[in-house]
Image 1 (cartoon, rainbow, N blue to C red):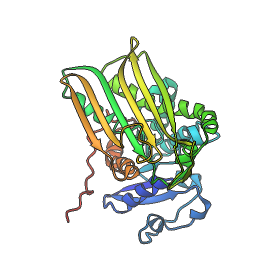
Image 2 (image 1 turned 30 degrees about the horizontal axis):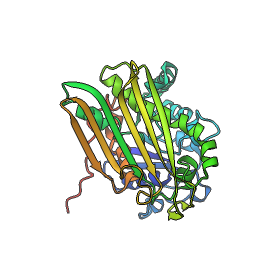
Image 3 (image 1 turned 90 degrees about the horizontal axis):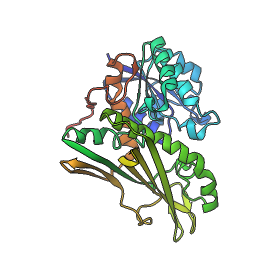
Length: 348
């Protein structure tokens, strides 16, 4: 029997996940929640660029809560930054879990333990009520900043420092909510400086999850997670998919998150966002790098992924069978078997 899946939100990543669900024989679409009123009532297949599948999109969360499904792919823009109620995502996730549905979310919760016992208890109570499981895959951070470093440490005899660099190019990203409202690109320096404080807290909480997860997995007790950031302004005007970047406006940012032990970094995540990598040359080109300093020394480099949002989406989709098979409760990547996308390989 295929797993019945609900797609919660259909932005750029949500549509990619929806397309994947509809093309996987082991998955069956049970419902779709949309935010845009213009999408309500539309066939989910057409929304994903496929033939009609007979599942109409709804804008009513209550209708989704009442649906019969095995798993919800929860992929809205994070309420912790965009919503008036910063706890809205946690409230929604707990309601879905209590209704008996497993949840895979990209809004964070890669490692809920980093938020304290109160959040953990709240989620575990909802899981127990519905006999359901929560797993966070994240977008950024997620996978590159926790899964890959831990995989490499399996080859280590001694670990002195774990370093991860993620560099992303947003030239082709069409969402103004992400590129302008979240990243701050195209804003004046004054606008960016005013908006960066809440964004800084949001970033620190997300990347702090990955740093804490890796440290806990390796048995390292962190004293603190430190953050610092800087931005770059455009030397001239240029166009990106989300709009016009004018001379003197923000076109890139660099973030450093360090997990400290006795004042020294044990794990460092460097994150670079560029409005157009060809125009922002101050920092490294798009791609991913993991460096383990210790015995032995190891460096793993991944060149730019052609469709980063698609990768983040299918990372969540591929987790559906493992999450549905897991015991109720919070399940991080440390608790699940290696996620292998059965049925995803197509021999030409």
